[in-house]
Length: 225
Image (cartoon, rainbow, N blue to C red; front, side, top):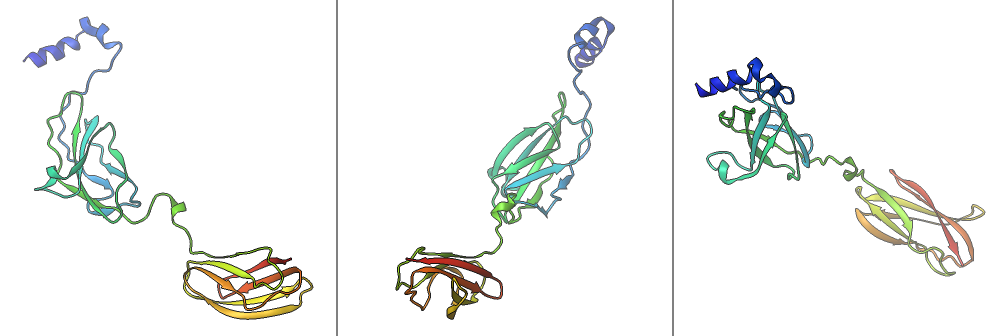
């Protein structure tokens, strides 16, 4: 009865001056249930390090209390690692592990009604994809000259980074006039490797090394002093 009397008083014309500078609180009861939208219950998130957890907008709710855990009940309370109050029907989670399952509960609330129970357990699994696509690099096959320039009588050395499977690589060494001086074939295995060509460049000048395989072609310039 006292609550009803206070509500009637604040809504009366005599108290209208109190309503000019603030909005009346939402005093409606909340009865709707919470439904996961993204990810769906038991679904998988798009990324693992940034998960946008979203549920339906519950009628008369202006805030939501959420608990997130690493395992469901009956051990839920012992595994809660986040408790948060948000003003919208979503929350962005960061720092989660890839390929892991998480559980959460949501309690819809408003300014005067916070007696609703926590929802049932919902779950989702994180993917193995990071949100920063630059972290996911395409396989590479790169080559660089380990020494340049080199001295007369030395053998050219090339360094490879191979993220592919074994590459069967052909090497052709040309003089600046286009004359073929040397050629050989070498298998380049996955990882980093150094290849010393089986030829000694005895004359000073500029040489070109053509490197070719089924998936790669490049030309490196070597200066002999």
